[in-house]
Image 1: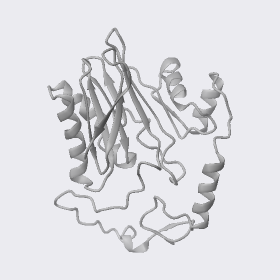
Image 2: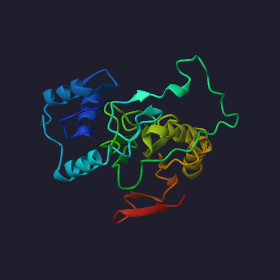
Image 3: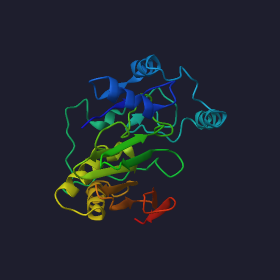
Image 4: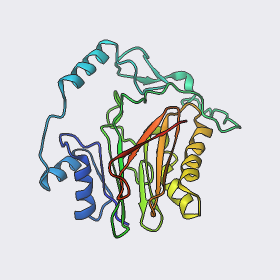
Length: 256
């Protein structure tokens, strides 16, 4: 099994190509930050490139004018500002006080900043004529994320996972939540144990929903034989399939 990933890489447009270069030309699994950018450029990818657009700059300006709301900070003060932020004193962190765990294991509701229009994760699986399975994921990250944040895209087993002996999985949604559960690894391992893709996908999503009832996310699963299915929570999910048996791309809709 070969894996390559990059994260927090700036000034290089083709993240998926950079990840492939990591896989093909290094013994590492992931490179991050400015060093990942330097690596990609040294290996022939265009850069440094300004990746900001007039639309993204306008959106960022409006967000700043709105006191950087909404954002991904929590338990900090001052709340309605662009920072700098400090931890709230009433968290008990400075008093050696541990909060009592929720006996049901359910995490308190949080306002999700993830929706169909503010992130752009793409996950794709390919099975070649020899039966080899490959999967790749690319994303621009979460809108208004805290600088330095790494999502689930480059985490093997979270947004993507594949095994020639079993099949593959791709995922999208609230990456900060989903990466805590490695849903695609779970899907592939469930299929390895005999689950059909549909049940494996539903099981992986249900494991997250039990802890985070308000999360938004989806996975699709495909067996090595081409049987595919999807599951989602909090939104309606679509995925596309093309195979030798189809004349064109077919779109499948998955309801929560």
